[in-house]
Image 1: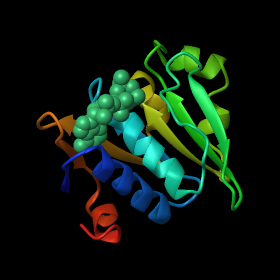
Image 2: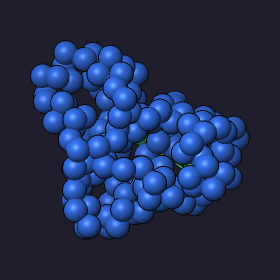
Image 3: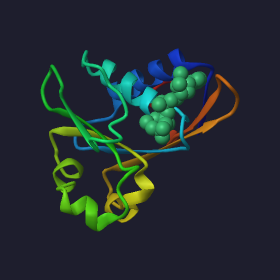
Image 4: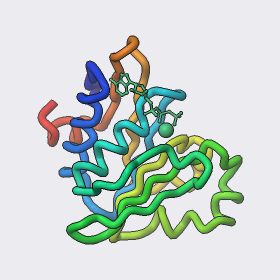
Amino acid sequence: MRVISSGEAKTLELGAKLSHVIPKGTVVALHGDLGAGKTVLSRGFARGLGITEAVTSPTFTVVQEYAIPSGGWFYHLDMYRITDEASALAFGIDEYLFNPQAITLVEWPERIEKLLDTPHTIHITLSHEGEETRALELPEELADKIGH
Ligand SMILES: Nc1ncnc2c1ncn2[C@@H]1O[C@H](COP(=O)(O)OP(=O)(O)OP(=O)(O)O)[C@@H](O)[C@H]1O
Ligand SMILES: [Mg+2]
């Protein structure tokens, strides 16, 4: 299902709505080019979970961990600098991809495609439609749940 975002604020709002319907134990693979809005969506998601800390692309740190005020963890991963599955496993990525108490959002998931072939992974693709316009391709069931 294709959902159009007319600006950054709208993507933040969509992220927050998604955070209310995606259960813990889920991995969300965020596909899309540089500047497509993966981090903005992640920030909205964190806000929706009640996280108030700054949320920026963990390009250099690879992973950022946030405690969810109501319990559990929000993990934000950026695989941009990870070359393949082996190097991801070497830094202990399984801890972030298989934690029933956590929700994990992954930017540049293509880098670790084989590790994301699990039933608890949801795929969302963001694309540029215009300066301030982005399209989000998400599973029909999820779009229904957030009222789109
Ligand atoms: N509708 C929109 N939704 C999200 N971001 C938008 C939108 N319109 C404009 N923008 C701008 O696009 C940029 C999106 O940046 P963001 O860091 O989220 O991209 P990204 O997909 O995480 O890129 P990267 O792969 O470099 O991490 C921001 O500068 C934001 O202000
Ligand atoms: Mg980013």
